[in-house]
Length: 73
Figure 1 (spheres, one colour):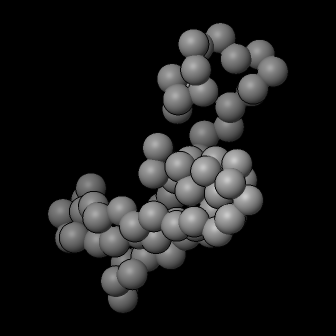
Figure 2 (figure 1 turned 30 degrees about the vertical axis):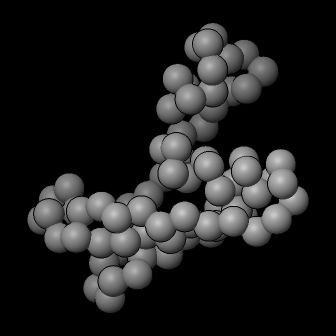
Figure 3 (figure 1 turned 90 degrees about the vertical axis):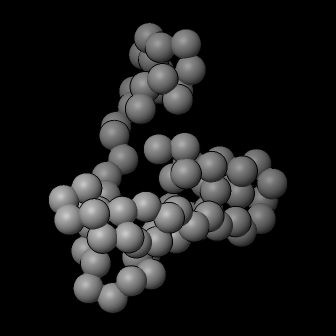
């Protein structure tokens, strides 16, 4: 999850557009893929034919019980 949060948080703090590229593989078929994420939380898969399911958990920041937001994910 850090790869999704990093460009968003750093982009907002620095007031600049940032992006990261994640090299990973499909959990089902093990096909390699790259996912790009920008500081507006827009993402895209760089390989044709890949359609991963991506989600971000909902975190209640007001009632956070963990020591940090990272632990909530």
